[in-house]
Length: 635
Image (cartoon, rainbow, N blue to C red; front, side, top):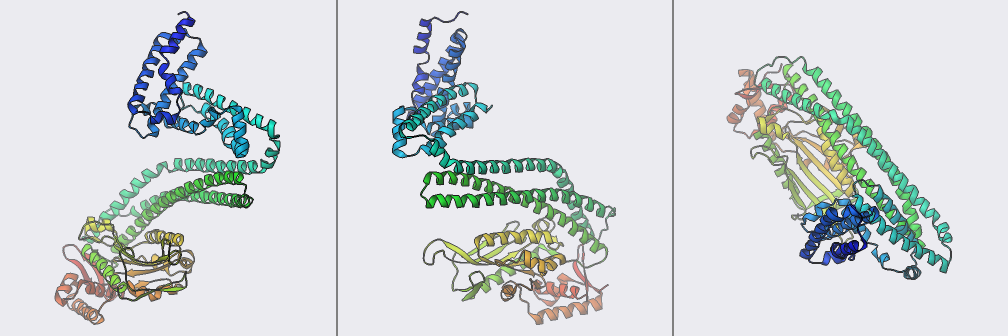
């Protein structure tokens, strides 16, 4: 097809491209203020014009003119879509472009003042505002960088690249001419370059370090993610194994001895090793993340010193440049913190699952060896929880309540609690089951004495800790709280208290008791060093026996332990003990529910008597299906 004549081309430009020019002659702000219906009409006109161009003119035009025309169609449609996007409209035209392309328009429009200034006006503006440093940094260097990124980005449409290249070039040429004219009138820019060289070098070094840290960690994370691909299979196998152990527990408690138990230990070791392998990968990545966080912190401290120096010298341009980089560092540190939290949660989850396998298998071995177990029904666990919270609330309502803060070295005297200072939590669940209820009392003061926000000073909290799934699915639980569960719980409280700089007293109660490793850990010197910070004191409570445990190094908790421990009438418990021992001597065994009926005592007191005698090895406890918990002569 022959090339178009000059007359044909003039007709095309006048008629077909009219709507395109109407858009390109407007800026984004003008377009977004136009009526939406009018903008849609413009879009339809441009679509029609583009179809006419593609069908009748594109192949008859010289290549450069055709490319220029296509770029104008693309840019005019993008401007209309960006206007709808900025307005938050539900317009289908927005979906014609990706987020980068829409953002490109908005960023470009921020500096459109230089599209209307003459060279002399740019010179006058620089002289008037004294911002040649900022101009070179933000407009001159930044816009060239944006142009390079635009041209290299494969996700941006080719016709748009052509259009923006032309617009960038025109703008940048104008700025260059203005800067050159300013230098010619007011002196060489070389002096400014020399003065600012240290600033540029510091920022460039920081940017390179920051990007290197981000790239290194992303590669490391990708490598770990690749290694963790097999975790799903291990998780499924672990879930299946734990379900199998639960079923074996049920069978044993029902008096049925399952077959094929010989492979349990080896299967547990194999799964445990798989969990450990994944935990090591996560720990290695956590350590790398923490190391990079420290590097960023050191760089941040160095730049903060520079920023303060410029602030004292009232050099706002340098100060702003450093502050921009500090914001980038802070954003990357936040990203690392979020990644570390996610990794920590995954590691804790693996530790809990590994710990549950160990505990359940140990419980099974205990039953097979004829050892006593703590069999706790959902009704008794619920009762223990209600008693814990009720007793704690009663103690905390016995005014005046005096609470000492070792952080402030001050005693707070409380004469009332309001709705903001007493909070209750629970994980919900079936109404006849425990719900992991918590009751928290908060002492807070104004940040600045008589004004400012209220900040925590002392928190005292009672926590009921139960295996909710067991109670809801089986109606009972026999598993003590293990070390992984305990550390996972208390670490969250410690982190929160240390960040908030307040003193947190925790009383954590379990109706199934505590694994001996938990009590050993709690009372150890290492635990005092690693966990018992100046911000947290912890007391463990056995809800059934009333036994308590806390670290002997932590003297603060001794005065508050009584807030959490259940109270028993010694005479009543003693009468129940004698009744049980007498019955075991005469009948060889006695059933828990029979003791409740025969003594007319409350279940909590009977529970304590049963388990105290078991602990003293004066009776042996076991569960018989259809009968319940029974006490027998010691074995």
